[in-house]
Length: 260
Ligand code: CAA
Image (cartoon, rainbow, N blue to C red; front, side):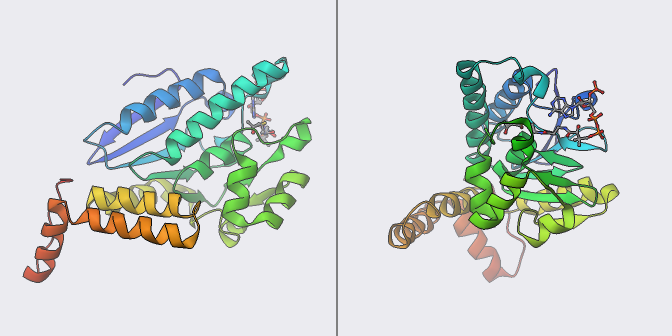
C-alpha cells in the first residue's frame, strides 16, 4: 500500500499508520481523508493485521485539525460534502473489526481530536493537547466531535470544551476520560506497540465481538444490549478459538489462537 500522505508499516500482526503531512501539522484535507479511507478499507480486510496504531508524523502534532486553508473558500454544499467524507472515515475506523489505538503525539485539535475519538483507545504523549477549537473559526465540529466527545466525557464537559474552544493537557485528558493513559513522548510508540501486541495475541474473533458488544450495546437499551451480548457470547462457542482457549486453560498452557 503506497499513499502520498500516509506511511504504513505492518509487522507481527500490528499495522502502524502514520499521517505524514508534518509541514501542515498533519491537517486533514480531502487527499488525507481519501488516503485514510483507502488504508482502513484495506487494513480491515488484511488477515495479517490484528490491531492498528494511528499516529502523526513529527513530534508536534497528531493532527492539528481539518485543513483550514482548504476549507476557507468552501460553499455550504462543498463544506457538507467535506464533513460527510470525514464522518464516513470516522465511522469506518470506529467500526473497524480490528482494534485501533490512537498514539497522540502532540496536538489533536478539531478533526484531529475527532479522529482520535473514533479510535478505540487513546494513548497520549505528555506533550499532547486535545481540543475542539472550531468556534474560534466561526464553525462547529464537523467530523463527529459533538457526538463522540459528549459520549466519551459527558455532556457538560463536552459543551465546555466545544463552546470555549479551550485545549486540555494530556493529564487533563486522562483525568476526564479522553485519554486512556499518558506516557513520556519518547515511550509513546513503544507503549502503543506493547498494547497492540497484547491484543494481537488474543482470539481475534473474541476481540472483534467484544468491540461490537461495547459499541453497539451503548446505543441500545440495557435489555436489548444484554440479549445482543448473550448472542455474541454464544457465537464465540462456534469458533475453534473458544475450544482452544478453554482447553489451554485446563491444560495449564498458553492458548494458540487462529481466528477460526
Ligand atoms: N489546517 C491547515 N494548516 C494548519 C492547521 C490546520 N488545521 N494547523 C496548523 N497548520 C499549519 C500552519 O498554517 C502552519 O503552516 P505554515 O508554516 O505554512 O504557516 C504550520 O501548520 C505550523 O503551524 P503554526 O505555525 O500555527 O504552529 P504553532 O506551533 O504556532 O501552533 C497550533 C500550533 C496551535 C496547532 C496552530 O497551528 C493552530 O491553532 N492550528 C489550527 C487548529 C485548529 O483550529 N483546528 C481545527 C480546525 S477546524 C476542524 O477541524 C473542523 C472539523 O471539525 C472538521
